[in-house]
Image (tube, rainbow, N blue to C red; front, side, top):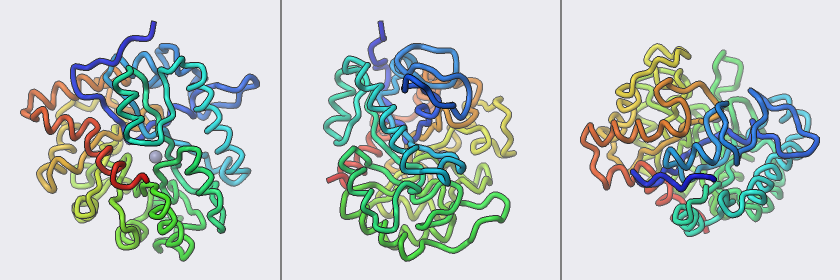
Length: 338
Ligand SMILES: [Zn+2]
């Protein structure tokens, strides 16, 4: 029996999870990017999240990332995107209502109430969208509600953060500006987590809507290129957006190493930094479960309760916990999704 949703804290709606890259849904299967193919509906010791562990950890749902390796993006981004969307729908089909593809805030809240996992599609890179943008409308119909113009590489729309100085440092392309306008029109939330600084500022200026970082942490604590500096944090807050704190050890640790020995107070420092800078309406969870190494004390989705207990012990009010757990993401969603 799948356990009910743990209600010790408000349900967590997570900004970014990569579990679909690790699930094996099609009869013929496809090579997973990492680890052993798993069944999302069965409890496993592998990876970070499946339905039973989500329920035990109070994880009520997430932006489910559709991610393409660079090889797949170049081979046939559209086909591999359809594969993953299909995989997610298949999990929902088998779940007897315990895993739901949600398209509205009301559907997310209803899933919380029904002890079901609320999955909302996000694309981590717009590789499957062509110059005409025609695919975007269709993906929106299918439930796409969050879009990052690029992963840490280049698309026809934007350039990702460069780790080795290999990517252009320019901002949004002309097509990228059209993409932003079309997302605004359709009601798709824009995600700046992987974009380079010039693209970040172009998105801030170009979009009329609140913008989010689904899975980035604080550069003042860990100076990783994927993290956000204080000016960027203020800009996201000024537009009414929120930042999902990434639990990847190299984005949390001041030394940017992958070592899983990360104490809970280091995780809390990232939340505290944003709260002290711009207030608690602009910080959320963006764990990167099943996409990156995470602190040993968290271990998997069940460990969210350990983080939340530490937040409560450090004096976070119930109202603040509600905003961090789901209120901030759902506020932005209610404003942008049409
Ligand atoms: Zn990512």
